[in-house]
Length: 339
View: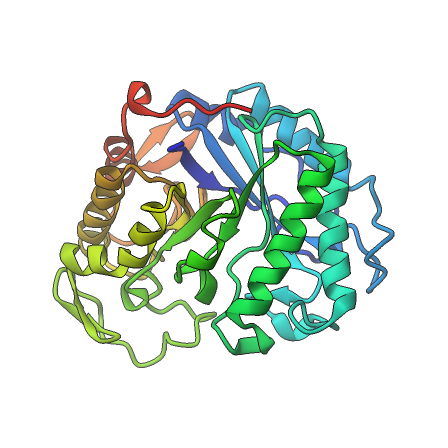
């Protein structure tokens, strides 16, 4: 760490279709620009029939094998994430039959899946592969989550993985959609994954899937007043103070998702991102944009006012790409990653 890259969406949205093949063109672009991290959110329904959690169609896992191999060939770290796990997803949770924090059947299935992946990828070095256990757990109190039962679940899964593959690198996302630090798990030996979306009234302006999007004034930055703060670089630093306290206990912090929806004006988005990514550089934190190609990405995001440039067959937001590139620490300053 730090690692820099993007989230890819090859197996995140289940619609009864087979998983996508690895996007070799995208990976070639990332490697050419010196990116070394791909986060791969997945949906368990690709390999599960109904709620028969313990009998996955392991033929689907061959697609994961392909994603991993394609990243390894390019020296890109592959972070495997359960975006939708048995009993929970931050989007469309009502589709779940069981509850991950209250139902033992969901907890058993969640543990079983990570044990299965641990067996399948035992021997792959952690320099190449990490397990990001659960995408964006909810707010405390939502769906029955407490700090205590979430901690117990993460510890259970970490023990199960290490019983199979003791050296596997693991990642745990913050609570509250990834925003709240987890000091109670500072001793777990996992990377803690934060989010780069605050203030949401800027990063998710007019994002229809976010319940807070209605009635927002067009965002400004700096100076946006939202959620009890007036947002500027110092407000961003203050927001991450609980994460700094966890880091002081020896925990590596990585920002597993960050980015800005395409309805925020380009000058506002760039001013905010310059402060956000500049803070990450100052703190030595790696980060991954959500996403590579799409409304939050650097390719064809559709934000008015952006200057696009043709690069390797893509229409790239040149200013945004340059900002990301200059926000990375030089490779020689990165701590070596061992297996």
